[in-house]
Image (cartoon, rainbow, N blue to C red):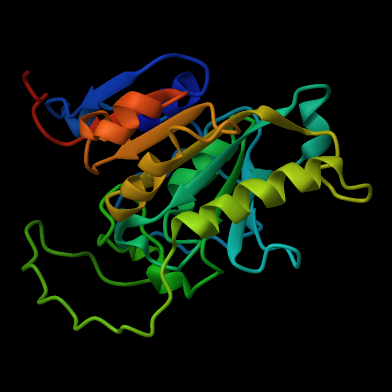
Length: 256
């Protein structure tokens, strides 16, 4: 997760970036940074949303806001500690476009701990829906579940519910608009604290496909595609994109 977060922080202000999976290190020899939550730690206690976490200089929390009922917000717990620093904005779409804003809680809290505001599509869902890695169907054991086998059987897919809401491009656009408005709204805790010239739209899998639609949005500086289709392969993205693109996948680099 630390590698992914570093890439996000860099991609907000740089040109196109492609990340691919690397050979795993000997996990027993790894020294994790303070505040880092080791993925899939058996018996890990559940952390309440107001528990500051993250390895960045501004440990962050997960909150809801009455003015953004279809989103979950991640931000540094102590906004005053930012001083004159303004927070770049990251708008996120989940894998499967799932309408659960706390789905990628730990990943987005980690980003926010580096001085960012993250806005995830979907309202707060049950804690059982939270995942701790970039695998969208990998539930965290943080709710007291027993440790899982090393190679669990893949569950059969559940039948789709056509009435179930999903995150959409329009919803992510609303997330951008909400953040920009909060920066200029007197009385908002984010008043004057956001960098509205540094906005990224990112997502994983289905959410990555949503993010790829923002290449020509003048408000967006970076598009992040996590294990989704390559946006640069899309004619519209190649011809009309105005911003940098960061692509991360667990696969071998594609060759021309």
